[in-house]
Image (cartoon, protein in one colour):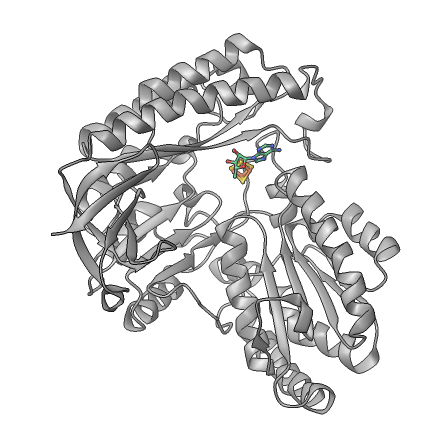
Length: 472
Ligand code: 5AD
Ligand code: SF4
């Protein structure tokens, strides 16, 4: 049984090797077509899952012979890794693809590639096929490991390729990775989502939930630490249900403990957690693991039970608040953040007020707040949605104002305390920056030799969303 499950979930190593042959073939074509240093421009939209996928896409491009540029103007290959979670993100992609047309007219040999969640929707792929004839290659979220073969077909036969079929087995281990976050690293532990929250397109474009094997994750974690990673974020749409399919013999709490036990000085973060799968066991593991950041991103979406039911979230306000109570009891310094949707179909102003009262009760550090966006193919897209957008925008502002007040109080209470942060470059000249375990930025003066190291910073001043401090 176990073998059968593994077969269904993992790309066979022989297939990865077969792609290796295309890597050499593409390299040869590139050398004759562009000389020795073809350049790729890769732009990523959306969540960290996409950013992590792009690291594997860039890793493959690098192996095929591409270097990277930060503008499409001088690129031989332009790749957009797209997001479908809200309409706004999709509109931006269509706009940016349109803007490539005049560039391609000047640079006829340029290859344009679109991939990611948005492309996994057949109506989008059709639109690209018909209205954007200068796009060479479109592939969905299941085909990342086939990039060498697809690109070879485009380059050698001049054919347009569309590859958006959903495949059962698509965890591809052993792909090269191009990381550019310094001492910070993403580590995917699972893919897909089974939850079908009624507003969300993700389960349709990323397929069913599937976990990487613990040994593969641990191996990659060790590699990252050896390469100097000091801040590792474990990624998945719903990390709390890690290990169920295929049966990994380990749940997320167990995985956290294993990674925490690895040698080295590093911080472990994780996202995203679904409240329905967040257990006391996991919160206990968090509390026990000294390397796990004191930050819990636990999206609540709404504070009203009727809306939560319509959203198919499968927990109540009371259950959510109980988890928060337990988490705070175990970790008094815990920083909690959340995602909230304003204006879900049928939501009333009174129901929104329940969300505002919940955020006051939880006292979140920060929120990602979104106005509901209708996603074709989801259950909520069929629901009656009568509240005008302008009214939803008012509600949105009211929620943000409440959160500002809460966040301001929280950051003010941090003045005088000392936090260990991983030092990063700051956009402000003469300054460096870092994030507390709770994920709040601190700006401080210091020299660039500290970048990539840990430092203790005493907070001297607080603004709503940012702290200022000095090296202790
Ligand atoms: N409209 C608005 N926000 C959405 N999200 C997901 N789908 C939608 C949608 N259709 C938000 C949720 C989720 C976050 C990643 O994006 O809050 O947690
Ligand atoms: Fe979307 Fe819900 Fe899955 Fe998150 S848990 S990706 S909101 S369906």
